Length: 182
Ligand code: FES
Ligand code: FES
View 1: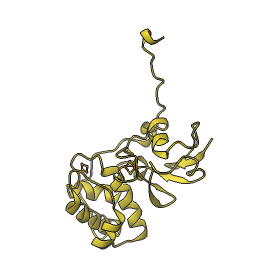
View 2: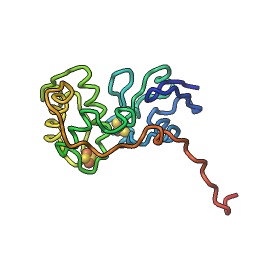
View 3: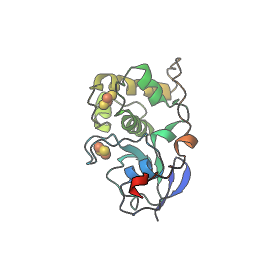
């Protein structure tokens, strides 16, 4: 059964090795911050970081993720204190928020490689679709996150505390079977 490290914890998925990583994360690990949008690699809602690269988790199987280091939005920071998370909130670059975890992961991967990304760098690194159209604010937020990460700016309004990854990764309870189906 495929083993990997998810949010710094060793995980073994007792599932068909051809299961998309997205479903293993959401259904087995209960890490539902990673969203299912299209399932086809088009929207980026399912983006996670695998060995430092932003990847669409609907497009890789758990067999392909074997032995790799996976970070989901729950593992990006324990308290929403990552510069990208702070800047997305501060710039109001979130409306419904469905696309936001995937965008945050793509942006975090970008900033690991490019400390001061240009607008063109950001557009190239963030292919994610946002039905609410937050794109202009998104560019501003990622530029601001780069300044925060480089300690050239601080954001004073701390975002609300996040969900503890320990809680987010709790075991999925067994499904109850209705009596008339027994
Ligand atoms: S759900 Fe993976 S790219 Fe849309
Ligand atoms: S904020 Fe709604 S889809 Fe992007």
